[in-house]
Image 1 (tube, helix red, strand yellow):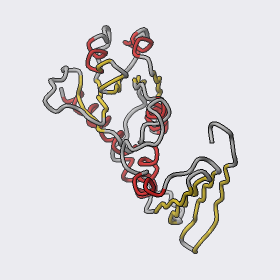
Image 2 (cartoon, helix red, strand yellow):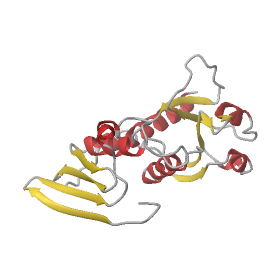
Image 3 (cartoon, rainbow, N blue to C red):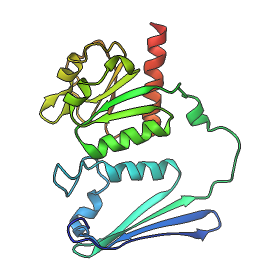
Image 4 (cartoon, rainbow, N blue to C red):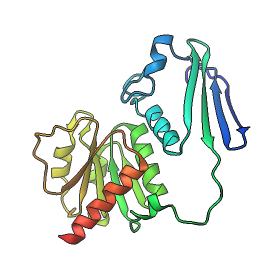
Length: 223
């Protein structure tokens, strides 16, 4: 709806005693019939590289499925789309979430570098949800100008625009902490700097991010 505006309708209702349904409808450009089956695929996008990465809907679907739900979409090209998310009702509980508490980490100050703003925002949001202090940068030059010694962890994309993330890593003078490399296409034959203690393939879920951070910290303490 970015060009001419439109209407976004959001509704939440009980559909069964044990399920709720979230409906999100827009009057945007919609999708062609032949594209409907692909919109949840990784890196598939109908937008320009500056507008989308093809990861947003995939992350939505994975989040819904992680909660035991399901998502469906209907769309008419030129008229808009409707997404329906059905989620199970969860009984209130005071018990800790074992899946999360098993990999809890102390609050860290983390730098994230990714030239794709939507991916950067998602990653920073995940980290903040996990209790970390986060500074995100789409421009590696601005990231390198920061007081790097103040950071506990750096997370950088493998390729930042036309620049290699490995070149950026080599310029992180004054930073001696661990680095996590994220990418949708890391060359397995590429020799990585010693500071790179983990690689996380895109797209990833918040639990994947939490687990890799936990692993990096555990390995660093062990060394």
